[in-house]
Image (cartoon, rainbow, N blue to C red; front, side, top):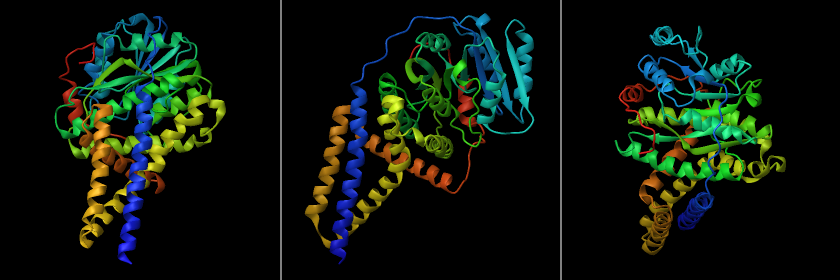
Length: 407
């Protein structure tokens, strides 16, 4: 009886795990073959730059200095600081800088009640001046390459582009194993987003630096009980017939959380936001009117973020149970064959991706756990849309030196 059950567990676990990995890496290898976008012509337009803040006293000064140093013409920039009821000196610091730079067009709005970033985004969209053609969202703790806004705006010279997201460069990728895992994840992530963008659109944006055509998003109001406002607007862009794309030449610099507690909190919060946005837009699945985005790009991402995590965890549980059963029964040959299958898969991964296969496997499992946790919280209606800054990341931000190219 137990022998039959262990065999079923072994077969189910191996089939589920291998099938998931094959689908994921088939998608990744497809991404490797899609060529990069051509560089667009430069364009000068009136741009609204939105910085949402929440207890950012430590970094708001360097953030504004970062914006002042941009190559984009300052007379064409409108800077908005919208504060989500900070309890520190963020507003006072921002207003002091505003007074000292009277020639800059800076608007500061302090909200009395904490409501979350999505509420701030809705406030920003409602405040957009009529002359603004592009709206840029950027986080207070990220550093922009000096030409980042210029490159973002230039992409909108292509009439079909409705949204553009930039590329994150981790400044502490070698700090410890957690930041190495984040860098591994980002390298895979980057190829997928580029391929999706060049084929049609990507559903996942970097809220740390993203821009949208004002005429597309101006009258929109996103759900305020989720925090994936960047991806929510990317879906809006695609619904209205425009493309939402990732541009690897638009760079911003950021630290990954270096400790497990901060990493876990950040990842689960972001994962839950994506899950909620994907679920709200499920009517776009397999809809031919949205081109390749509706036919397979969104369905693949929906599967990987909502369907795959519970299946992967079940398959790992089956696999572990089968190993225990095989060891107890002394079936060494079956155990050896399973181990050989896993080793062969990791060898193929290393050959094709040039990444550490062990680190990829650990990263993949960890991020599936994050997604599963976020999915369970969403099912039980636990919402994480109100956020507090990761202080270890903010302290590191102050020490950044100005760079304009990827290291």
